[in-house]
Length: 230
Image (cartoon, rainbow, N blue to C red; front, top):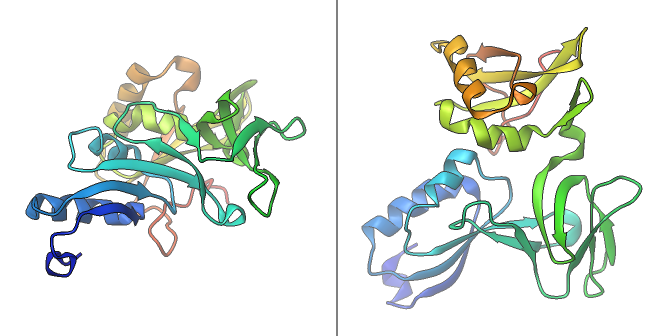
């Protein structure tokens, strides 16, 4: 963004991806004379650490977007300056739970897909709002308890100073058990597990933690959520 090119004009809507967020926050702190009204962040989920940074007062209104290739654009937005705010549908879009898959379904007469069944688990609040829980194929069944790694990661992120993710590993007793995978080899893993136990109920805590020198990532920097047995 070049303030000279803007010529004092405000930016009504600025779309970015999560990796651009730190740079944007730094840029606006150095250019307080440039007005940005709304910033939409899409392309990939925000990390819990990034979401917490957006709870502080900012000179713009940040929103997370929900959408996919099949919807061509986002079909819902969530204000990131409000803790635990739900996604709210764009005009002309409604939501329900598909009875076959138990996942979110999107309907709109104004889109070419008309009705689209997603791979996302949600808590449906109304036909036009929901809270995202995670991907259906990421759900871990441990002793009959269904665990959503994305939800648990947000809860334990204050206790873990490095990039991490939750996955599963085989368990003779539980079928599957929760495994914490952390980036870095200089960590006190027992202390991290103890901290997790203060933030989660016992049945939702990782049973074990492992450290890797680096976590697998996509070309865009997104962490690949792999089982260590993969």
